[in-house]
Image (cartoon, rainbow, N blue to C red; front, side, top):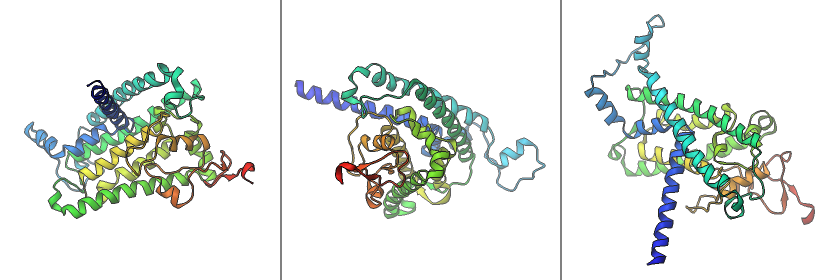
Length: 330
């Protein structure tokens, strides 16, 4: 009975930890409100209708129209409330959950770092800790404003190709769109990330993210705002460009946010799924710079031979993802 109880408690604690990471990951991107709107769009629109909120008519607007009609024509009436909700709740979730995570590991268990930390003998300097929190907060503010505007647009009847009934396009399309969107996300993530590791873009933009040689959960969105918007943009644009069921879209979106936080955490975490790298994979990217460019899989790094190898030497000035030959192996 004791062994069963221990296994039950361990499973429960892992599940609770997963939920915390999930909510924290959603908050860091400022998209919790947008996720709710995508999940419950019809119900929220119905509730607004019962409360007497009229959907705006469609049509072209005139630049000389007063602000009220212009916002209604753009389907953005009450946008300030949506933006305020997105910002306030994201910051409360972000600081509350992230600080709890930080305190549990990086403060309360700092003396046990060899048990849980990927780089147990190295920690960020206080200056870099402050920098990642401030930079991450700025990007979260940007993400919250964008998601608040998009959520407002959708609730007010704005154009969106996302659908909710599987029978509308069938199971074959549903499954293929799930796989296709996952691979689209991984493809864009790998090649954009590798592009940012070209010398000019790295030195001017991406190096800002790589000042965190020992990444923490705060590092996940601590990057140049232009880079943050580019990563967010290709995902956010999807339901406006192609028909996609709400489940495949949100599953891939939230999974990528969840795992993005895990692999920046600096905490030893094993792979849950066969395709998923362990947390050492991206931690080594920060440690060795130009290697291990993938996010959710090993595939493109394997395909382009940019996986880290023990017999290669890597560094901030060794671009290309292949390192250089170690003297010991020559």
